[in-house]
Image (cartoon, rainbow, N blue to C red):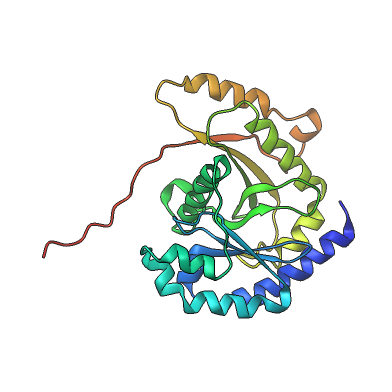
Length: 253
């Protein structure tokens, strides 16, 4: 892991943290920040613009955040013109397979931010977290003394558990670097973590043999003898999501 890259991400994370602290809760629910070694990305989790990003320089961040905040009532109205307004602010549309995956990712993050019971109190920290080593964690969460790494898949795949297990091992290998950056992270500060937990998130299917998936996950995420002697890395869990609608019903007039 390149120290100069981590230093740049750390610097940008501090700038992003200070700028983001002034944003209201309604803003933070639908926009979060992703510091990189080059710039800082403003990321949308709006249902009509899932995971669209706007890359801005650290010097321009506060001004761009303020511009979005001024338009926030219109953006959250989700009217016919909301998408056009978001594009005017600089966010670009995505299409195809990647767009479907990002819709799931944005929905997952909104659920964490809403503190829905299925997330077991795990707080949202980051999306697409990377320290410049070509490894990107779809979603990162934090609870108590544990850092959670979520790998999201549109469908079910045998690659998910080994992939998230490798991410957990990477975090513990470079724990000092991750702790340094996450201690100043804008969306949520992670003061310190003692353990890292990987969770593979995949689509549920009515006729899929859950026992087979459970046995496979246990085998794929098994720890080496040296890891079993350490409490740092837990086994890998599987969460299977079901897409459904949630309702806010208007009272009878």
